[in-house]
Amino acid sequence: WDSAVTAFSDRLKIQEATRDTDAKSQVNVADALFDLGTALVKALDTQRSMQLFTDALHEYQRHLDNPNDVKIAKCHSCIGEIYEKTNDLLKAVNALEKATGIYEYHVGTDPPEKEIRASKKIDAYSGQAETLFRLATAKDRLGEEVTALKQYRRAMRLYKSLFGRDNLHVAKILNRLANMKGRAGSVDKAMVLFDESLRIRMLHLGNNHEDVAETLFGMGIVFEKRRDYGAAMKAYSDCLRIRSSKFGSDSMEVAQVVVNIGVVRGNKGDFSGALKSWNKALSIYRKHGLGDDDALVATVLGHQRLANQLKKRGRNKN
Image (cartoon, rainbow, N blue to C red):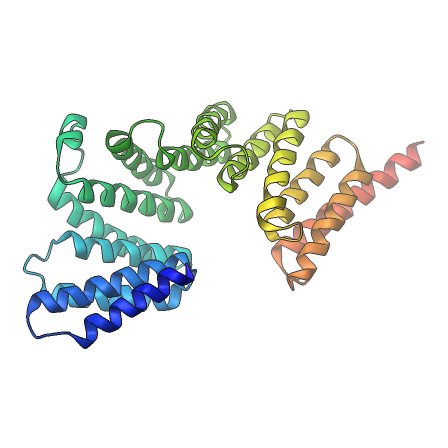
């Protein structure tokens, strides 16, 4: 994304250098601010992108005739996404609900599918779907699961109407819904959702994409809860292969899988294998500067203590 950031930065400089006092010129500057902010989000520079989105919002509010313009909704939605990513969840919800309100001004709350497909307001519908997804994510993290489920389903309905049932937006929502069902103990429903998410993702992305790995990881957790440890190990092993290739063998993404592989081995009574997995995970955590007071490290250390106790108990019985 470095080349995109450079290109949008150059465009912003041009727009600011040729800025006039008329509203159209000011809006053009706001467009450039917004586009650069979007590129910086992709480049993981949330601090600068937040400032750019905020500046763009102020320019739009000052110079657009309609206070419910879709461009204002886009700014609120992107600001809300950054708040969610930086764990300021209440501010995220506030910004995302502002965006949702503007989008509903344009497209309504739950329009019929035929109306969505025939409409020329594709930008507003897709923006609303994206905002509802972000709002559902924030609500889920706040523990408001009922509201989160409702917003995920609204977003999925819009995406299906806009792009068909087998699009990647739908797969992403199915994956989130599966995680929620799994946490609630509805493992059979979770697996159905994971299966459908995996089918769509493999259809579009192939077998070696990080999104496929994400779904495989979730499936591994559900298989664990079912005590189907063979299937869990297969899902985790496939996930590990993809993540090792995409992120490197010493990445945090790999450590997450290795920890769970250790749990599966421990549940099967292979305490030596489990300890080997957890030692590898700890080694990765140490390389990333995590100490014993970190929650991830503390969890693995707790697993190790329990496995050593069970291993010792087994020797004593023998």
